Length: 236
Image (cartoon, rainbow, N blue to C red; front, side):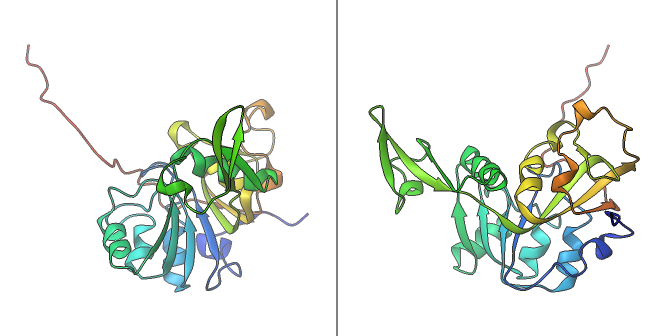
């Protein structure tokens, strides 16, 4: 079996990027972002991208780089309020936005990985989210139909990976990453640590290696804090 380990983020993404592709990018706010892989996508110059991500980074960080470089045609997202560049591009008509309730976005991605083409939810009924979507009544309540999300490429940030591709995430970084790892035609993982199989308990595997195609040791681990609130230390 060929090795899943690659020497650099550039090597890990070689041959998988193309114009017009759909990319899933893990992370929640600035936590669990594939910090090493996003700059490679920016530097590649691929354009007309559809990006599926809870949000789009922050000033100078994460997916913001792709927006700044005008590489993104459409965002499928949940939380967009903190990114001024995102807001400007959408309001100007430059960037298409498919806005999802956060739980719906997570379930659409999970459904994509599980092979479930559609499901029904009450979330969004009676709002703009429901416009143009089929409605059904179950047990006297109205539900809207949502469809799966899948991608040409999923980029994922893990805490630890073994060489077989089994992954562990640490705390809040276990956000959209596990679901996205299952829903990409190709899944590329950057991990803070790469170990041999058997190093961690199989009962503690968050993503099985069968979903993972390529692994690279992360080169960027800034782990920025999106909003830092402090108070003066109490004096004795």
